[in-house]
Length: 385
Image (cartoon, rainbow, N blue to C red; front, side, top):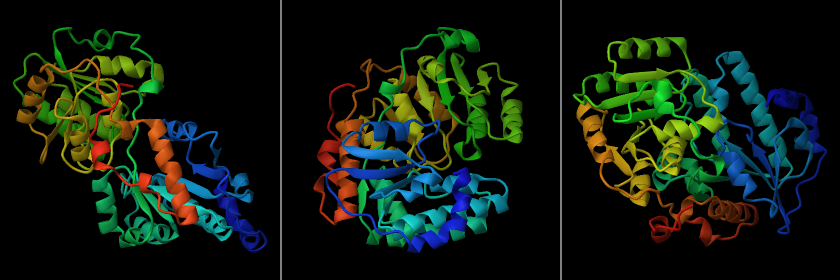
């Protein structure tokens, strides 16, 4: 993405190169981004190959011919703190979109989020969405609830092809636990552990979680917070709130991939107290490690509860409270299967087929019924992965 700004110097090329030729033999897809800390994109595209030719984005690739440019997390450009730098990157991004569209490529957006979490540049963000949405030819939502919200927020989404395709599991990405993270965190083997794991940002409500846990009467409970705060002020606030309660453990660091399973192995229940939540890879990560989750009943979390059942997904309304946390610790002790069974729509090969069908629907104008959500299949229980 760093070299995208150079596209502004190449706008004259828009008029020199011809359109993409449509072919059903092999779809050629340009993917952006692919290198992220979230293995979502690598799992999606590795299950498409070799039937679909997927190439990682670079500015030089814009001279190629692609059926689709598949865009994920475009709002990440709004998280660049310098507003001039952010505006320049966004302008270059739109130039690249226009360039590929002029050559016949279809722009497909997977709607992980409908706004920038950090909300650093409100005016620029308003302009961004006003410019981005009309350029999109097809949109993929990870849940029915998210698609409904997207259509309310961006009415034009209702005028283009859309599909609901679930977020897949992470079981194939991680090995078995290798270290004793309870010992590392100073947690006894008898303690019942509430775990928050992941990047710590304002909208994830970790500071409120700490304050509400302090008000619980769970003498045998421990709250473990593991992840990197995105600002020193947030880290200081959480640390200050936690300092007076010996039941709270903080580990403010980036966890290496091979240690992730070990931290989840410490948990009796994983808690995600987000103030805003549309979709959650962290929820699927916890379920992939066979850990029950406590989440607000908003965004896609209600559908997740329907799909996995109330033995694995517990939801709550409003803000998290001491009573909700105490009840969740009791709920986590209830008998449940050792392994979470994965419904088929969360399998990556199934997701890759659905996504490929949607590409064809957008490119060739066909009705791909398999791209539509099947309520029976979505709520069926497939084989354990």
